[in-house]
Image 1 (tube, one colour):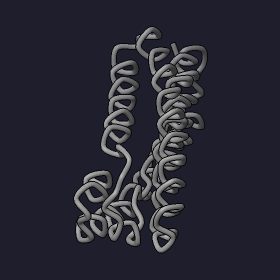
Image 2 (tube, helix red, strand yellow):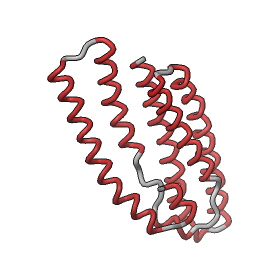
Image 3 (cartoon, rainbow, N blue to C red):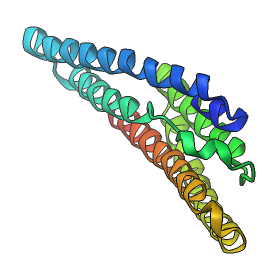
Length: 172
């Protein structure tokens, strides 16, 4: 929804994303508490311990993923590098990591790593494109800087998903 808000310049949808973030934060705390209880009450070992530890780390990375990928000031700028494609790649990585965990597949988990490199390239290209736009349109500095931030957050999302994939490999 955050990506959709950026692509459609929908301020109301952006606000809904921010409101939902509070719920996600509460769920993160609940999962952390449940993991602590499992460790304290059941004293897991071997694969069970690896699973619980991986879930704790994955939970933290998922919370980091739930960012507002937009800033309200960005809505005034209609010249965007392909942010939709980058968003789609982030969501595909997340789906791949989810499937890797469900199927306990190390191959699927490691396939996430290559996609992260693509996000790094898109981020670098977007920064160059926006710098060129600023040179031609000096009045657009603030919205362009905000968009650079959006691209950077999407790139960081890829890093967090890569961390999740690494935890899945650890668990397996």
